[in-house]
Image (cartoon, rainbow, N blue to C red):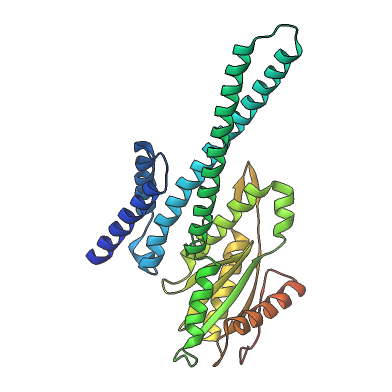
Length: 307
């Protein structure tokens, strides 16, 4: 990574840290320490020969800030629940005292004061939860990375394809592949969603290790991914796809002592002059549908001459 890239990365990290502090009503030292630790962990996993763009790297810190916000929401929700429970108990206590023959006006007044104080605290907690939830939604919209797999997300895909299609006539071949995990719902139903998440991470790790630096990986939604391979002919594109199918089906994920096997189906197409993002994805989807219907664990193509 070049010196300018490092400076840009540190600047982005600094700006995100300041933003996280400004958006916390009661920021503290521990939050800053946690952010810096997360940042160190993220930087240590970055390989110089695996960075597609500085935008990808900087987005990691947006996700770190998002994690801080999520933790804050969880904390405030827990506090809110406690206050609501206490409020209920105190209210019941007041009613019990009112129903007895013993009249203790001063005690009732104190209980009422406590009740009012806790009600105000609950409202404050609700307001903070709402604000933090809005911040997380904004971060989700603005981030280009999928928080689970750490590959590009659907928003990044839309921007990338719009940029490609705006050029109309490309001077090189571009292939788009839609990849779908076979019978993923059955895996989730059998082993649970945590196992499903681990499979998604397992899959993306294979993709990252197998594809070239210039190729792009996007999580399209659920168990679907889109791969964009640049400057490659149709024959080599199909070889890469078959290589991915072979690697994924032959590797096993061990989860709670059990060996999980997955297979994938792939639909592939190539960019045509005057394509739109919608038409490009639609052809790949059509090819994926053929792969699913004709046996799965295979690749089918649509709109590719000679294959």
